[in-house]
Amino acid sequence: MREIVDRMAHAGETDSEVTVRTLLEQVGRASFAPMLMVPAFAVVTPLSGVRLFSSLCGCLIALVASQVLLGRRHLWLPKALLQQRLPGKRLKQTVGCLRGPAA
Image 1 (cartoon, rainbow, N blue to C red):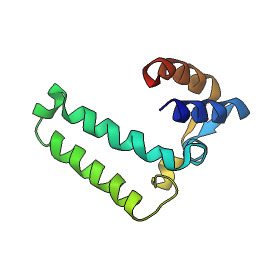
Image 2 (image 1 turned 90 degrees about the vertical axis):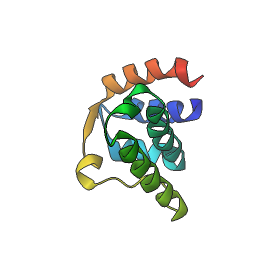
Image 3 (image 1 turned 180 degrees about the vertical axis):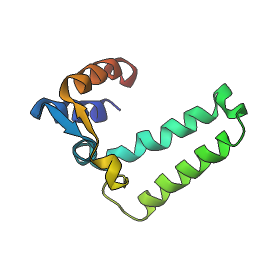
Image 4 (image 1 turned 180 degrees about the horizontal axis):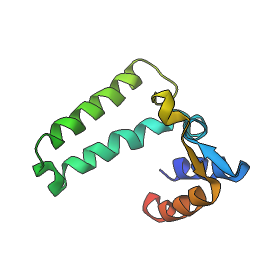
């Protein structure tokens, strides 16, 4: 997880704005692990009591896992999401907050 956070930090150092596409390319195959872990952890929280929440998380896990099985280099996302921009300053703040939990 530390390596993923470090790669995200490296992506934020180069530009004033960073696109989601740039982040995914920088993280590469490591982008699959967090995308599998987030819905899995969410299911074991009280949110799992919300109607259809567990099913939605299961579908997300299945979609990400199928991309791994298909041999994709990084997570596929729709073009509209890939073009979203994040200010470099905001990315640096976020990465700073993630360093502790990632360790």
